[in-house]
Amino acid sequence: MKKEVFVLETIEERVRERLIKYLSRDDTGIRKVVLKLFLNGDKFTTGDVYGHLHNTDFDVSYRGVSAMVGLMNTRLGILSIDVTGDHNIYLLKEDYRDIVRNVLENY
Image (spheres, rainbow, N blue to C red):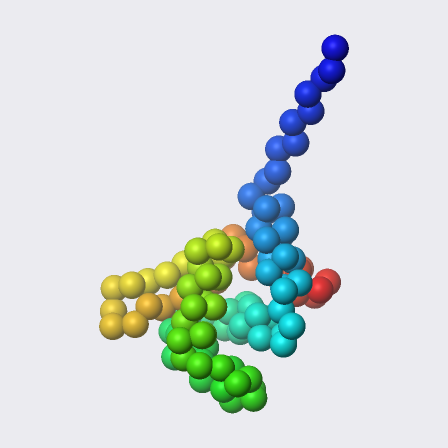
């Protein structure tokens, strides 16, 4: 008789795995820069992120940045979003700060 083994992953472990996969497909380093921006800053609109990337010599379009930040929000689940004003405002969720910091330090 074969025993079944169930591995229960914590949310933190899943987020860590997703972050590592996300960064592994980052050929230009842009994703790492955006994650560091959220880690070291506070709240940002897509325009804020676009301006930061543009000032750090990344060749990006506003739409591309919007898609990237939206993807971080939906796929990674590490950002909270405030949609009450004219522009979406994104913020790194407090619960994930240490995970993001740890992944960035070790990646």
